[in-house]
Image (cartoon, rainbow, N blue to C red; front, side, top):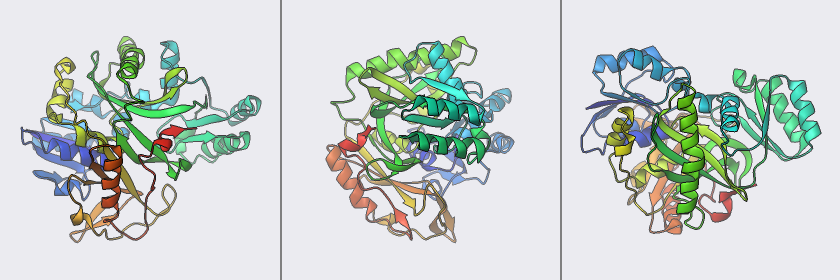
Length: 427
């Protein structure tokens, strides 16, 4: 088989890495890929931009690709699944209409409220003055969300009214996220512990699920601005992620949303991600993503013992009921090594040392890397996610950090508290 993976981040490297392990021994193309994907077996990078849908389609046709797997959200928002379907090409990922579950926070919130899916109360605004008046009258902590895509950075947890007003001004007036901030959602702040849940969906049916905990803020103890994700671990602690909670999430959140999208003419096919806050009242949805998460994918796929390619093919063919996912019970911890200054401005082009010295089952999934004269250099804010499995969470965490310490580049920075229990709680 020949498979095309669209994207160039850590999630796409992890997907490529896992697909390369398939017993089918597929030939893999990654467009555009990064320095990590270029080093996977039977894999080659092709310089086609993530957002160039016609270029991706032309590549798939020219190469006789059997399946295209879309990693990032941008091409899904632009309708890559629709375009490939028109051309009779098989693609793993939702249509433009179904992808609105992520690409429009307002659409997702309205869908959930109309179908009784547990989530925080919220109001949407397209006028800054109206939004500011609402925040001032609320007089309590709120979450300000840009409606559109903002690379995981369009959410501000505002503890005070002043913080909320500042966030509204930056998003709606200064337009720091461009048109993504034309409309904002002002949402109640949910308290509890956060978990990410993933499932394969074929339009009507849902596979078994897998869960992970990720860390979004740049600073120790979940402080500072939001990032696209700065670390993760899977599975959550058994005392938190119980079989009863898993069943409740599937029955009360995942299945109702899948049914709602199908009922409204936008059946969802692909990987569905639910970001949840487990509150005293039970699990509530913070957000949905229309693809596998980043960096959660980097700690979930090392635990997958089943054939990822088979699971994706069955999903695309409408046969999710036949997907059998087997997971390594051992925990996996991933620590993102970022460029100094991220998620703000940062420098790139620095040579990365130590990648060949990782030991055991540790893996460095590349995100912001490139090849320069045969050498691996930094090319983004999130550079690598160094992951490791262990006999328990503490062992996996120790192994991950031991290997993080072997990787070095100018300005390398990372949090030292990933996979500590207290950091799994968001306030």
